[in-house]
Image (cartoon, rainbow, N blue to C red):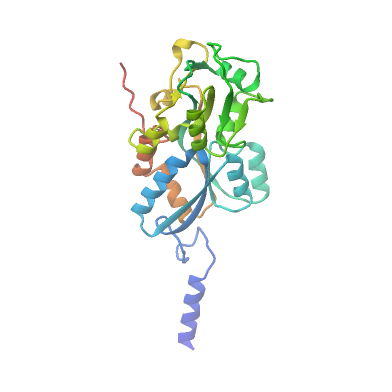
Length: 302
C-alpha cells in the first residue's frame, strides 16, 4: 500500500501541468532541449537560417523548425495558436494588444536588432541616388520618372502583406499603388528578377545581401546596384551599412521583433534568449550587417 502511494505521488508529480511557479514540474523541453516551431518573416530568412543552425550546434538536443512567410501570415498564425513564437518587423499595436488581452494571451515582445529596407536596381540603371519623396512618387504615381528620366518599367516586392511591403506603404502613407508595382513570392525571387529585367527596381530586406562572409549573400549582390537614399539633401545620401543604420542616417530602417508566448523555461524562450542576449546570437546579427539590440556598433570616423 505504501509502495503504491509513493508511485502515485511520482506519477502525479511528473504528469502535472506546466506552471512557471513550480520548479518540480517535469518538462519535455527546456532552454536547450526539445522541439520548437517558429514562424519567421521571410525577409529575415538568411539571418535565422544561420542562427538556428548555430543554436542547434550549441544545443544538440534542441530542434528548431522555422516556417517562413509574409508578416501578416506570421501574425495570423500567432493569433490562431499555430506557433508560440513569431519574428516580425514590429511590435503589436494597441488594437492588437487589446485583442490578445481579451483572449487572456500572455506574451513577451523583444527587439533583437535593427534592420533596413534596400532598394535594388538592374545594373543598367543610372539612378543610384534617390530621395524618400522620390521613392513615394515612383510607388504611387504612374507618371513619375527617375531623376535622369530613364525608364522605370516595374517595381517588385516580395509579397503583399510582407514586412517590406507593409513598412514602405505605411511609412510613406501610400494609399494607391502605381500599376507598375507588383509582387512575387520571396526576396530571392525579387533579386533574381531585378538582375534579369532592365528598367526594374526591387525592394528587399537588407540581410539577404549584407553578410560579406557568406558566399550566397555575395552571389546575390553580384549583378545588382544598391541605391543610396536620403531624406532632404542629396549630399546626405547613404547606403544601408550598419553604421548608418545605427546613427539613423539611412532613412529606411526598421526593427526585428521576436514575440513569444512560450514558457519561460521552454525551448522557444531559450531560442529567444539566444538571439537577444547570447554573445553568439548577437554576433551573428552583427556579422550579418545588421545592428544588434544589445551589442554596441564600433563607428570608425574618417
